[in-house]
Image (cartoon, rainbow, N blue to C red):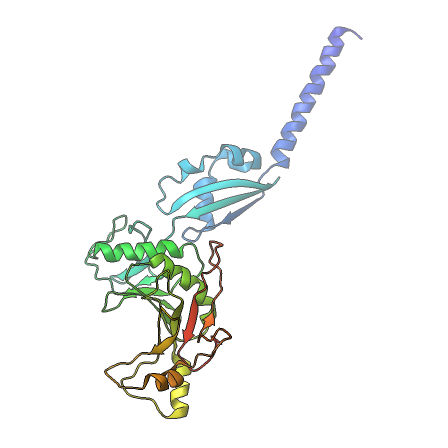
Length: 328
């Protein structure tokens, strides 16, 4: 065979090879399915139009390599970043990371959601799931894209600080507010958590994350306002059990508050009195605390829950003031 014939056959083989490659490339990697993940504020269709409105989006190989998602989402204030990955030959996965909303407050009938910097990012008619209500804010004016105005800087910083800590856990409160003593209160269903002021807030949050699972389905108040690194136990006022105890005994006393106060030096509990009611300390301990005596001789329930950071919980104990010996 002549050299000319060999060249022609080689050229034909090359052309056929290119055609096969193009067919496989265009058909074999054609996008037939798109999965959108991580979006809460944006619909799937909105995300698709935002990042897949390009010729390269028709091919999984090209889409993964050549679509500039940062450029396409730079005008979107609620998006942190978007990535495109190829799941298989015909499936794309669009992973969306939206900016976290720390909380929302109501203003003129609308829900104004703000981010980690206290900037109002989105205004909705109804609350967004897992975004807590910040109650009791005296806001005189609010605009989207601007920082919250009309609230003291220290109070706002406390809200933002706690909100950032809550991003690390799925245990989001229903709402937050400041009481008349300027203490931060978190509400988880029927459980009221007193966080106190902004001192030792990291330690308080660690204790809270470890204790909350034990209080599921309960009603009452958890006192973390005086927690420090040296605090051995915390007090939980079980409202339901206390009500049952008072009803059964017929000995409910007007003006007296249910609850034990932890002696931080000894780890033992004492009675808390309200409105100047005089009670015998030993009698009050027996009637109101109801905490059981464990082998160590201390009235407490051990909490060994781990925090989400993977660090072991630092042995915080709960003292129940309901006459029971456990959270159950």
